Each structure stands twice: as structure tokens, then as C-alpha cells.
Image (cartoon, rainbow, N blue to C red; front, side, top):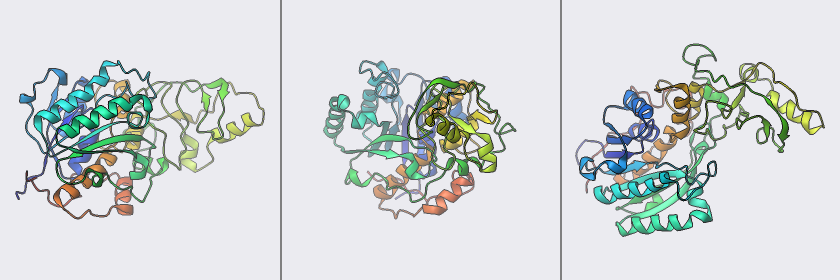
Length: 376
């Protein structure tokens, strides 16, 4: 065994969420690809110059290095219930580009992330079956499982499917078990400077307007009480899934007074007012606002020091499209433990505590044992 870390090729890397988590777990990303220029700049600024910008369909496999793992999250808009769920969406074809690279590079293992719908809806059963059979024909034992990021220390309820295949051992052992601790939005945001100050001042200016015909639900956090799709956030729980369409009136809403003082969220009293037969308000209090770019990045579990490139709308989009780095970290450390027969170090409260202090991915902290080179 050598003393070099296992190597990774990353496809559809985006702003680098999955790569950040894998590198924190002791993997070495040697090559990455992303087509969006803003996301590519973000990636290079934080993770290195090994990213090749461009359309993966036009990149020959011969230009991609050999590796131990292939990872990536092909665009999911064609499968997402938040979109049109169009089977003919050309972005859905990129699943097969992922398969092509796995076939040509023949890594020891791969990890492919996508939306929950690809794993659970009957309309995608044929594509699921094709994927499974194709990977099995390539010699991989394949398992897929839906993971909720909030079960792994990410302050966000975000369910995504992870297809994990391996040439060594049983793939069912490669999915991580949930962490024991959960992190609330309130605790996560403690790592940031106060709202509106340097380091937390990428402010979304979209006005919050009460809906004239609110869509009511039992919970004030589940209905449609405002114009647009921006939902209010329960501070002492996990945030709802952050969408890539943030930046305008789809950006989640937060109660600044409740954040600062611990007071009840205004939306709860407004919800009770509506349930009691009251008329919708024409405006909201000034302390109701939308999340900043920096707050969204922390809720997505990016390190506090991570810097995003491009216009503000692009930065919101990059965050919403990303795999939460902390979730990727848990997937990666489980893979590393199983593939190398290494003891899986417990995380629990200590990991969550380090995260809440914004030091989880601090380069000065050693989070893993010395990585070892995979033996074919």
C-alpha cells in the first residue's frame, strides 16, 4: 500500500459541493468537469485548477485520467417534481454520459447523485431499470438509496438518491448510516456575522407580499401564505429544500426578530389569524426578510470561507444545485472505510459541534486517518 489518497474523477461538478465533501474525507479529485462558467470559476477558486470547463458530451474519454472513483450529479431537471418532469429533456440524457465515463474508465467504484423522484416514481421505473442493468453489465454491484441531508447534520430537509456501485464487496454496505445529531437553522446561522454586515450582506431584494388567496396547510411553514414559492423557515428545525431557482420570490423567508431574540415566528401568529377567519394582510412586518447568499451556503453546509462567483442570481443557483458537502462527506467516509477495510470513526455530536463552529472543512484540522492508495 502506498500513502497516496484514492483518486476521483468528478462529473457535473457544479460549484464543488460533492467534491468538497470527498476531499474532506481523504479522497483526491484529480479531474473535474462543469459546463457552467460561473460554477467553474467558483470551483477553481475553492478547490483547484483541475476542473475542465465544457460540455462533457464533447470531451473524449481519452482526455480523462484513470481513477479509483467516478462521482457526480447529472442534471436532474428532467426528473424533478419541481420541474416539468419531461422524459425528453436533453439534460436527462446526461445520465448516460455518466455511464459512458464509468464504462471507459472502469473505476473501482462510483457514486451518482440525483433527485428522489428518479428512485421512487413509477414513471422513471424504466430508466431506473436500464441504469441498474447497464451498470451490472459493466461488472458493478449496484445499490441505490434515498438519503435525507438533515439526517447527516445538514440543517436542511433535502432528499436525494445516491446510486453507488462497486467492483469490490457488497454495495449495500456502502451507504452511510444516519448521524445521530441534527442541526437547526438557528444553530447553523450562528457561524455567520450579523445580517447585513460584511460576510453576510448578499441580500435578496425580492419584496415579500402576502398572498391574496393563501393556500392553507396545518403547518404555517407548509402552506402558500406569500406570493411566489419562497417558504418561511422554522428556525429551530431544518430548512426546506433550497431550490436552484432562488434569488427572487422563490428565496426562503426568515423572521429576523425571531432569529435575534428567540421570539415566536411572525408567520405562526399570521397563520392562526387566517385559520380563525381573518382576512389576508396587505403587507408583512419589516423584520420578515429573505435568506442571503451566505446563509443559503451555510444551510447547504458549505464552509463559511467558501466563495461563489458570478452575479447574485447565479450564486443562489449554484448553491441550490449543489450536493451538500456534509452529506457528501458522510457518503465518502463510509466508502473509504468499506473499500479500505478501515475502522469508521464515530462522528455524532463532536462532528456536529465542529460543523456549527464552521470548522468542519478547515484545512488545519485533520478529519481522517492517512489516506491510502486503492489496490486494484
